[in-house]
Image 1 (tube, rainbow, N blue to C red):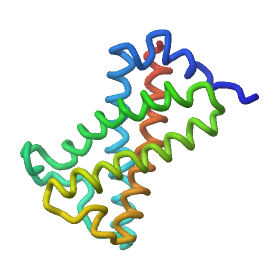
Image 2: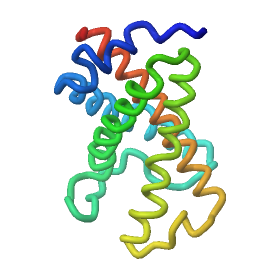
Image 3: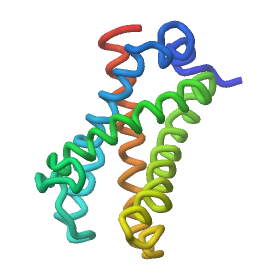
Image 4: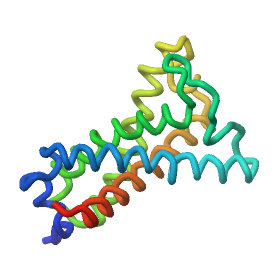
Length: 163
């Protein structure tokens, strides 16, 4: 039988994700992960000539007018709460490998699916990046990096600020 991740199993019960502190730490983790993991990966891919785009864009976001990078980070914070709730409630009692694979898989899939099939059509864009395999892969890779980053930052924040 696999050993649970140290401390993670108790987070879901003893003041973990059900507490306002746990939710706040998950939001902060998701916010930071956009800046440190998601946008950094995009910057590396742009510098390598693999993709085009503007990571860390300060151009105003459509509805809010705040810089795009901060808009993405705010959404990352919201998704961080969802991700950590799923991980803490579903995978905390599993092995460490299951936790990190879950962070990668949920991080890659959930935000990507919502963007592809809800956000893009609302914006008048074709769903699923118009079926462009490169754009689909980029979303999965960047969001997967965000998922791993969110879980790592959350664990670090929990270690620093305790339960």
